[in-house]
View (cartoon, rainbow, N blue to C red):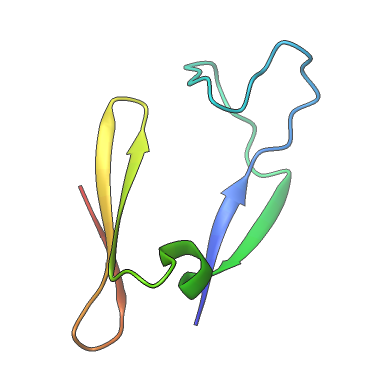
Amino acid sequence: MNLMLDAIVSPDADHTPSAYSSRPVPRVLSRLEINSLELLRGHRELMIVHGDQEYRLRITQNDKLILTK
C-alpha cells in the first residue's frame, strides 16, 4: 500500500523546513511517494503536527489508513 503526500519544493533561501509559514502555497510542484510501512515505522498510529493542529494517522483493523483530527 502506498501513501501519496504532496511536497512543496521552494527555492527560497530564507525558508527553513521546520518553520511553519502562513503564506500562500503553490498548488503542487512535485509529489513525494512514501510507503506507509516506512512512514509508520512498525507502529499502527502516527501523530502529525501541522501548524498548531494535531492529526492522527492510523491503520484500522481492516488494514486501511485513516486520518483524523
